[in-house]
Structure formats: structure tokens, C-alpha cells
Image (cartoon, rainbow, N blue to C red; front, side):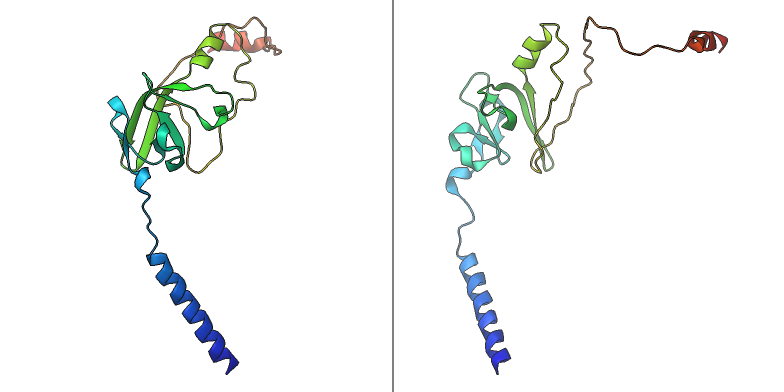
Length: 157
């Protein structure tokens, strides 16, 4: 008899939970897609900065040009210029211009990318989308030496 009572209790509890879940409004009215000027309508994962809680990456669409702060730079206050926001199928992408990187590269220092990390999150991934060729002028010699017969072998081929 105890098993039947326990079964009925679990059944009623689950039915009550399912019924209460149906009554939850799954849409948050302030989180509807918003206009971001020349980039058009943006939606989750991106959001307008006026609705910070509605997305992972808030874009400041009120600035000209629009800017964004990536997760690693939220504390520093540095932002990047948004060049493009696009959506292809279910993938949303954003192109940004990193002014701090450009300034650093103009100093001719080579240590910028030392210990450079990107956030590890299931919502974001980073990749280079355009073929860029960046040449650094560094005043140091490598700690390697080429074999003496290396040039000789190349000439024989």
C-alpha cells in the first residue's frame, strides 16, 4: 500500500509541476529584437546596451559608430568599434576593429600576443574571418642555428 501512495504522490507532484510550468510567460517583453542603426535588427546573443540582461554581448547602438565590450575587457572599459553584424542561418557574427591592438602594433613591440587568451564559453567563439598578413619588425635574433649542409642540400635539389 505504501508503494501505491508513494507512486500517486510522485504522479500528482509531477502533474502539478508540469501544469505550473505551462503558466510561465516564456517571453520577456523587454527582450524582443531591437534596432541597431545601419546593422538593422539584432537579437540574442547580441542585444542593445539599453537591455543588458537580454543577451550575452551588449552593443552600444547609440554611439556613432556602434561599439561593443568583449567579456575579457568589461573591467578595463575598452571597447571595440563594430564594423558589421550579420546572421547566416542560425549563426550570428560580428566584425570589430580593435583600436588598442592597432595602437600597440604601431609601437613596434612584439609582446602583445604573449599570454593572449579568449573567453571559453559555449555561447561565443572567435575566429579570423579575413586573410590577414601581419608582419612584425622585431629587433631580436632567433635562438636557432641552421645546419651547415642545409644550404648545400637546397642547391643540389
